[in-house]
Amino acid sequence: MNQPFATQDAQLRARAGRVIPGGLWGHQNAARLPAGYPQYFSHGQGCRIWDVDGREYIDFMGGWGPVVLGWHDPEVDAAAAKQAALGDCLNGPSERLVELAELVVDTIPHADWAMFSKNGTDASTQCVMIARSGTGRRKILVGTGAYHGAAPWCTPWPGGTTAEDRAHQIFFEWNNIESLERAVTEAGDDLAAILLSAFKYDLGKDHVMPTVEFARACRAAADRTGAALIVDDVRAGFRIDIGGTWEAVGVQPDLSAWSKAIANGHALGAVTGNDRFREGATKVFTTGSFWTAGVAMAAAIATIGKLKRDDGVGHMKAMGERFRAGLDAQAKAHGLPIRQSGPAQMPVVLFDDDADRRIGNAFCLEALQRGVYLHPTHTMFLSVAHTPADIDAALDRTDAAMAAVKKAVA
Image (cartoon, rainbow, N blue to C red):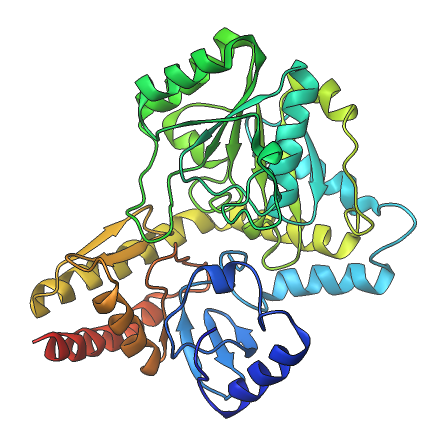
């Protein structure tokens, strides 16, 4: 656990420690924020967030990705409130289910159909099940180090799981066609799917987009063997291209997993697929009491609609490029070499010669103290709510943070 940040935060951590194993679970522990970060927050508005001790931050995490339009986007709030007044979790779905499925199929080029759940782990797991159902095979090719959720078959932290949970996984190296082909050969005639993240975003490492050649090789291998090509777009979906991240490389998957940005912070996951896997999708049993709840679906309709109407992807890219250019100039001015990788709207910022993260952690803590919330190792997220003025205000503060770090390093 992180050390106490301030009075209210410390009190909540102490209370949580008595009634929650470890005080907190999951990605916020695993991502290992350095001591000094707040753990509890009171509210958000636009691209700003406030912790429980009243400190305001220009935010670059967006709730770890879901908040794509900004907190309390008025159109999303109005759509969610309208549906909430009618009912959320009813005996069956509301009309929003059909409306959302129609919108998703209209928006995503490879999608002939859509199914919904509650989070990214649901969606990626459904994709694997549908691929196995549709092919009658077992083996799943997975990128080494890739993150596809927290279910036993894919969690990177194997406590409580068994080797049998992963018995049919075969690993390959990202952007390495030779490695991919070796894995295909190893799977033989039992290959159900090739599963890939939208791009390589391993924690604490440079982010890497798929090359066109690699993406085409994955598509060709799936076509040749009859396997499903699955793209896990849970993290990147609706941020890089409104029709799916791999539209940028001109390759369409058979199945895709979506979540995070689909409903601007409301809990929703989705699977999209082509007609080849429609029947397979009807034969798997995946369900949840809240999976057809209407409020998140109403929020998703408003979110996707606004992203399409206002070119949200273009705006986030422009704001990300503005932020990236500013950080590059500051790093050069202060003599602190950095590496910025990944799409501009989903950046990671790492310092050279910083294997122990001492410099990166110090920079993020200095920025935090000046009211900018960054992450030292994880993908960060621009939102539609970031304006040029917000980016410039954040850069004023990161410049001071870099100056402080340079002084400390010297």
